[in-house]
Image 1 (cartoon, rainbow, N blue to C red):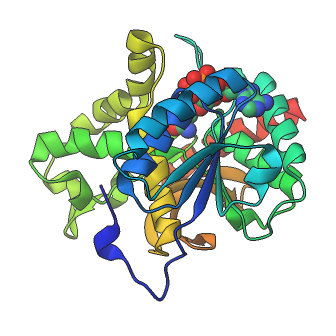
Image 2: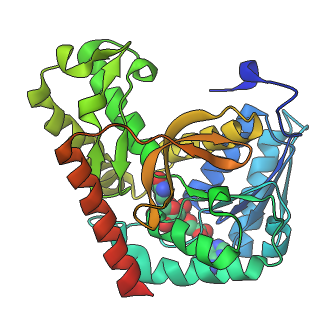
Length: 313
Ligand code: NAD
């Protein structure tokens, strides 16, 4: 999906430079997605495995021969720090059966060394965390970078939300984009759904779909990553499309509202809530009017994340 039609010249960034740290499955799929959408000038790719990184750049360059307005090159953490947007996908992925939180110890060390290795950092940089557990590592990057918190956010439950909207869409015959419904909380096993405020054109979703089906659909969306990883070892296309969507909202300063892992003062951690994304990053959190059970589920997710942060620091 290209946001070219939404281009608002007065608000748009110049075609930006985007650095991707981690040239593995997710990083490279994101690079390819951004190249196809043609909204950027340059991609800088960084990985500790320089041979793999070189091979990925050479391979991507073949795609660029059809579209030479975009440049792809290998860089350093210092180069990444001077980009307009940096996307962090470096770190261990889940193995079959592993939860995202199981990756915390190993990936915390990697993210700390990456963020510290980037200094000094462009004060306008927008950082998008992807490495799991994304909510905690977004918070970690905020602690080490010194950037305003709104400029660092994580690609979290946008993916789960799209998965759930697609499942609901098949049931009710309405496009996913017309279903106002958010997966919130942890990008992981403690995610929750804003069913009580879910609507289509202002009509409660419960008048279009039997609410007895809600829990099973939420489970299918929550488990989808596990099922994909069990079949092919990793997930890539959905998350890459989410990351590119965040980038386009920054580039074109759309201020579109979507779920994002961001700092929420009430919990003093990063957790997924709907927010407006624009050139300054997370510009405005819009907390839905959740019912009592949903508030409790969001609080439970926050508690789990808080406990892992405490146990890991
Ligand atoms: P991958 O193993 O294919 O790629 C990871 C890359 O990171 C490797 O190329 C590795 O060499 C590199 N790397 C490791 N340490 C590094 C360092 N210090 N500096 C630079 N590069 C380093 O894994 P993947 O499938 O691309 O997944 C990457 C991460 O993204 C995982 O943590 C995974 O769980 C996460 N992920 C998040 C989402 C999401 O929705 N947020 C979705 C899918 C995957």
